[in-house]
Image (tube, rainbow, N blue to C red):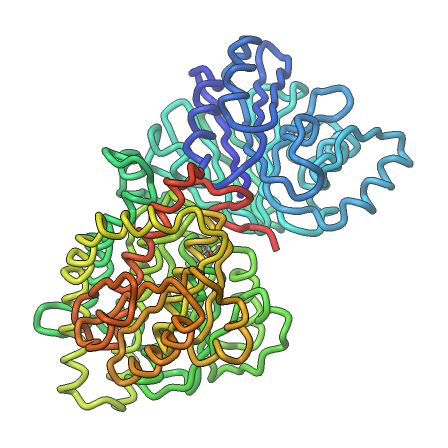
Amino acid sequence: MCGIVGYIGDKNATDILLNGLESLEYRGYDSAGISVLSGGHILLCKERGRLSNLREKVAATDISGNIGIGHTRWATHGAPTQINAHPHANKAGDIVVVHNGIIENYEVLREELKNEGYEFISETDTEVVPHLIDYYYNGDLREAVTKTISRLIGSYALCVISSREDGKIVVAREGSPLIIGLGKGENFIASDIPAVLSYTKDFYLLNDGDVAVITENSVDITDKNGAPSPKDIYHVDYSAEDATKGDYEHFMLKEIFEQPAAIKRTLIGRIDENLQIDPVEMNKEFFEKVDRLYIVACGTAYHAGLVGKRAIETLAGIPVEVDLASEFRYRGPLISEKTGVILISQSGETADTLAALRLAHTYGSPVLSITNVVGSSVARESDYVFYTYAGPEIAVASTKAYTTQLVALYLTAVAAAEITKKTPQNLLDFFKKEILSLPEKVTEVLNLNDDVKKLAERIYKELDVYFLGRGLDYSVALEASLKMKEISYIHSDTYASGEIKHGPIALIDDGTVTIAIITDKQISGKTLSNMKEVIARGAFTVGFASPDCEDCEKTFDVYFKLPKSSPLLAPVAAIVPLQLLAYHVSCLKGCDVDKPRNLAKSVTVE
Ligand code: F6R
C-alpha cells in the first residue's frame, strides 16, 4: 500500500527519497511525491502515475536539500491525481506531511477547520493533518503533532517537516508501520525496511502511539503518554541484494524458484534429521493452553489456513475454524481463553489481521502468529510467533510466502499432535519425513516450467478460467485461481468439484478452460467424474494430478504429473506449477507481473 521514506543527514535527500520510494514500488501505488527542506525553505514536487514521472519532474526542477520526506500513494480518498498525491501542506506551505493509513474522522475535522478559515485543495483525508498542525503550532512542532494526533481517529504513519523548525523530522505511528533507520550523522525513516536497507541495517521499530523527533544525530521517542519510549536496536541480517531481481525477469519468477531454499529455511532449527522438533521454536506451550482453534488470515494466507485446518485436525485432533480476518473481526466470534487463535500474515501488517489479533486478546485468547516479517506489528503483539523466514517477498502476488506458511502449519500440526497424542508416533514420524522431503518435491515440480509455459500460450487469450478440486485440492484451487486473476486479470472462479453440477456447470461451453487438481487417490475418481461432466459440455480440460491417478492421462486434454506425496502434504508441490501458469499467462498478456493493477503488497487499510 502507500510507502513512506524520510531522510535527515548530510547527503542529498532527493536521491535517497527517490531510491527508497523505488524500493517500495512493489507495495503498489498510483502517485508519488517528495518534499525537501533547503535553506530554510520547503520545496515540494509530486506527480501522478509511476515514479519515473516524478523523477523527470524532480530533474527538471532541481530540488535538493539535506532533509526530506517522500511518499507513494495508493488512492483511498480521492482519485489518483497530482493534487491528491502526498506530501500535503498547510496554506503557507511551511508545514508538510506524508501519511499512510486512513483518518476516519477527517470529514468532521475538515468542517471544523473550514470554520476556522482553513482552505482545502485536495479530496484526501490526509490534508486535515498539516492544517491541524498549523492550528496547534505554538513554537513546538512535536507538541503540535502530539495535539494533532490526539484528534485523529483511524490509522496513521505520519512524517512531518516544517521550515519553522529546521533540522528535524517529527514522526508518529498508530496502526500503520513506521521504522527509523540509524546511521552515523544521518537517520532514515520508512514504512518498510527495504526502502533504506542499502544505507543501514540497524533500526528502531516504532510502536502504536509513539511520537519521535529525529535529527541527524539523535532519535527521541516518546510513547502515547509522552513518557520516553526507549527501543532496542533491531539488526536485519538480509541484504539489499536479497530484495533485488538478480538474473530473473520478475520478482515473482525469482520467488517461485526460491521456494525450495525458502522452505529449507522454514525447517531449519524447527526439526532435525532425527525427527526431533524444538519445543520452544514450535510453540508447544501454546497448544497446552487451548482446546480449540481459530485460524484467521486474508487472501493467500487464508488459503494456507484452509490447509492448516486439515493438517491440525487430522494430526492433532483439535477442532479448527478458519475465518477471513475481515469477517472474524465483526462476527462476534465465540472464543475464550481456551480458544487459540492462529494468525497468518506474510507482512504482519495487514490491517484486518492485526484487528483480529487485538480482538482475540480482548477475549483472553492466546495468539500464535505465523509471519514472514520479523518485528512486524502482528509478530510484536502476538503471544507466540512462528517466523517463516522465506526472505523478502517483493512481488505483490504471494508465492514463497504461501508455501512456507503451509510448511509452518504442518510443523505446527505436528507439534500439536505431540501434545494431544492423537496420531501414533510411527505415523507422525512418517509425516515428519515427508515434511523434510518437501524442498526436493518442489525442486522436482519446478521442472514442469517449460510445459506449463506451453499451456499458458494455449490459454492466455481466454476470458474465463475455472478451477476445480475436492478437499485439500479445493484449497489449492482457490489459491491457483487467486494467482490467475490477480496478475493476469483473467476472470477466474473456483468450485469444489462436487458443487459444479449445482449451478456453475451452466457456465461451461465449448472450449471453456477448466483446470482440476487431483492429489488424493481416495477421492480422485469423484473429481474425474465431475471432469467428465464438464468434458461432455465441451470444456478444454487440464489436470494437475499425482502419479497414481490412473485415468488422468486419458481424461484430460493436457495433463501434468505432480510428485508422489501423501495427500496431506500435496498442496506444497501442487501449487507451484499453478503459480508458474499464472506467471506465464500474465507475461504473455503483457501485464505488470510484479505490480498488478489496483493491488498493494501490504494492505494496511480496512
Ligand atoms: C495474494 C496476496 C494477498 C495476501 C493478503 C494477506 O497473492 O498476496 O492475498 O495474501 O493481502 O497479506 P498478508 O499475508 O501480508 O497478511
